[in-house]
Length: 338
Image (cartoon, rainbow, N blue to C red; front, top):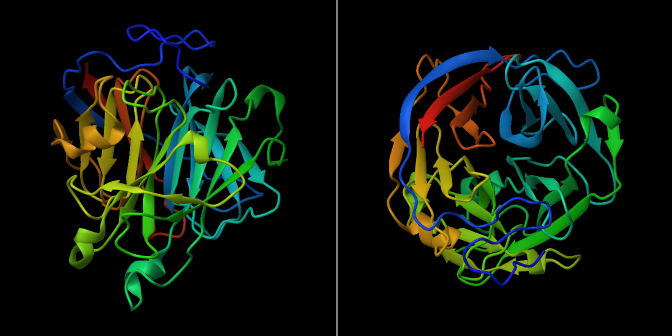
């Protein structure tokens, strides 16, 4: 969906403004809480043993709180579930079905504009690739073609539990192209640009951050998967850079207004500001304006899922919690003063 020509107050057909503010102030943390735990009582699916992606719905609510979308890392099939952010209750689960759909290594989940159609889409990053950073020669092992699954956000009111989804599901294929220091790479962070910018970015552009161990920190890169290349062919993604803090990025999100970006590793979440004149890459090249350590009361350490609530007033974090067979991970919520 193209941006309108007006530079100051661009409006999409859904009636929501689609540009970050002219200037952005850094949020202040008002403290965090350890709230409800995610119920894993799903007789048709796996327990939540490796939560590696979350996203919060902009339009759907349950028990007076936004719907929380969650998926496991791997081993449970091509499935994801909807929960209540407020109570942790599982609402419904879904299965992806179709050619090229698998659950090799799902590492992140994002929600944003579909870009090529009205409404919001879920984006599931099947781009984990541990072999690339764990097996010699480093950066040559593992999958060379990775997938992101893009689908319209399911409507909880018109679907059934454990429904198979195939209509409208797109498989976005990519490889690491120009500027990548390695042939293959591992990634655990997927960002969707919800707004576009005044420097050529459009709503629906995707960004991938590769993850490397400390010894290979210099291999880390940010890759852009523009809306214009999200077709049937395998897109060779150019690397934009890798100057942002931290090599082992495991999670990230962009606020719905496009003005805040969070990148996190196992222990810290770092928030960056972005104005409408900045691309995602330019914003991440600056220093983070706020760094959050482990949430208050967190007994876990391996955090691999994070996201902003719809108005950007809270940061939600969930641990992978892979040390227990059924960990029922808690939802950590950090309130942000904007």
